[in-house]
Image (tube, rainbow, N blue to C red; front, side):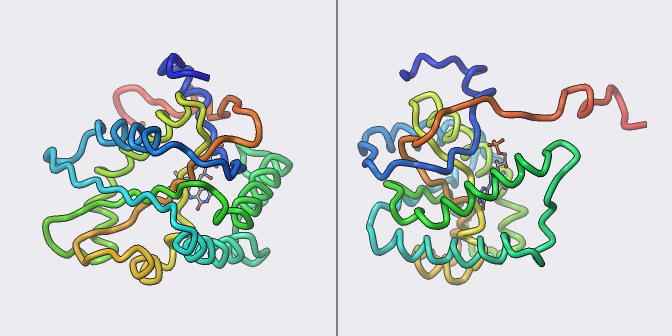
Length: 211
Ligand SMILES: Cc1cc2nc3c(=O)[nH]c(=O)nc-3n(C[C@H](O)[C@H](O)[C@H](O)COP(=O)(O)O)c2cc1C
């Protein structure tokens, strides 16, 4: 699969790809993903998106351990996680959980864990940072996911591994004006790419006002 994948084809086929091979991803390809991510807009054109590409085995193991703890809580019957949604039947939801559990077991084997961070011009507390920086980092994350898809790489946006914010900060060595928002495992896919399944547009759009 080459770069010629069209934008709309990438958008409609950019599923969360959790099962990944351990084969390394060339550094120039990782740089290309981040360069694509950096083309996204940021509030006031502040361009505070920063990326930590984790390839070191010991670092990957620490992040994988954090993710495993959070996934165990997410997967627990008492977590309140819905077994089915109006738009996602129980069997599909179970398959998603199986993929999340697979990822939790293998995260340390994924060749690159890309951490999407935002650098503020001053220290910002966790909640504030989420509100202030989220809008300026998530467009970049989506750019990265689409670029990965266009290049035939598997990736997925994840946050569970960063849920223990203090522990994640320490592992990543973040200064107090930098927040980590998303952990994106990147590698060559074990399975096949496929189309995303989303709500029909008629169910999500209203014209001119809500009611
Ligand atoms: C804000 C956000 C947080 C997410 N966190 C996780 C996560 O921690 N672990 C995970 O495996 N997937 C995570 N996902 C991926 C979603 O589960 C996935 O995008 C959704 O189920 C749709 O999957 P699909 O694109 O394959 O249809 C996250 C997605 C978003 C947008």
